[in-house]
Image (cartoon, rainbow, N blue to C red):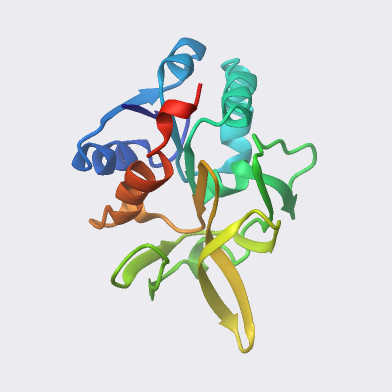
Length: 201
């Protein structure tokens, strides 16, 4: 199986390292031919508007969107979650996403860069708590009926927001597992989300 990491901006090397630790063939992708050659895609953290703009500049926005719509397994972390969301709150004017996840996300929901934080998080499918790194992170405000919430946080009393979700072949987290030495989310993506990869074109 060949997994591409969208290599336009953001934590590309860190995702490649984590995927290689999971013993899959991981490659950086930034051209249409490379997008066509992969079985699954990881969209890294970074700046969602910049990644979308560069994807259009490199003429790969439409090919990525089409492959996601056709069922290609895709994982997005932080900015990647925003780019997979069908709806974005606090979006910049004209902001585009690849879409596919029936969720509404709020950009920079936890605050600015100085408000970045870490916490121990309990996530469905993982047997033990994991350390989650949040940097200018989004959160999920609303999910559609087909979306499974895998992890939530409680930024204020009696209010929870999803920070990890899955809908079929799409997985997204608000946080950055690639910035820790814990590759269980990447392994979950490979072993669970991509396990029926033969069905996808």
